[in-house]
Length: 253
Length: 253
Image 1 (tube, chains in turn cyan, orange):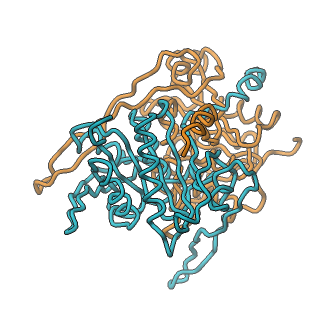
Image 2: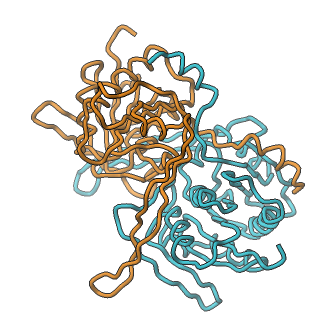
């Protein structure tokens, strides 16, 4: 590809999050960027789409040149509406992020960041999700560099139909990173529980909380970022458990 | 298992939907049922969970004996909070549905019905999603019979860790059904587009619409229900695209 690639940038933290701004800045250097992102934070929305409500879109312009579309919808909505309605030419690549907080292990099925990239893949466009493994004191320079490298590689090599890349970057200076690791989705889970509380009027409510339980398998995404590697996992959305088909056929329904 | 199984019933159409009532009625015959479901319709919410807001729970009692918990949250929230907080003994099985409308092909990644069963699986409980292939003139008797059969089979045989069953039932009398088919997730997609409209104040909004494109592969879920079979697909949530790992390692990051 000789001309500059057309890059669609989105996220789930919302169009005013620092991570999407960092991603926009990084992508500017290598392509023509369109930003279409949720108007507010949409973390842990999974692969939600908006069917029941109308979707509104507002153009956002900042003094520094940042232009984007703020969508009253989910990350998957943003990618759908961008490609179907808002932009004229289909983008060469979709990149979602930079998410604040890692998206690894079983938690990727809750991830709005990953769902946006999945939507891009469903629509036939090579897509990437990128997350930074921290919620505060974030060093955006590392994931910005990584985003550029991965996008260039994907444009050079392409991706198989139905496969996207889930990228996670440790929150340390780029020089301290041990390198890239191609990983598998691990089994780390958010061991959640619900705190039972009372509101000021004496009514009960619940608030979800918990902690991440990391798995020790060295081939996984969470192990890689815990050990200061950049993790890249190829993922798909073909959910059939092939290994169980034969057994199930013997159940004799 | 000699004692009556403990069955957790949930859905994404909400606790007042006819499908969950039909499922409750069917499950009553074979086990001790607890209903924990969203207070309103949560279709196409994907695998969303509620982190930002508190979750409220209200007990619902109907004159006919139906008792359930209405949760201000997503289907995945319902299963999480049921197991973590609301019910004392872990259920033997989680069943989500009966959804109004099929959940087949790529659309299962948007499905709240499937996400509830996925959450049950993540929490280590054998789980089933069941959907009826119609939005109106629904015949609940067929999926009620199917739900009982599938639940009994699962209790008898168990399910492998991390695998759930996605069941779809054609909307015809039980006698007209051609039988059960063990299927794969197909490639049928919702070919969506956005209608651009103007609100009464002249402001633009968008509404998603579209039609389903069915695939012709005879081994798939959508093919089965189109041909009057009950479809059972074993699904998982390990999203790693194993076949691409080796190629990706040769990209030399």
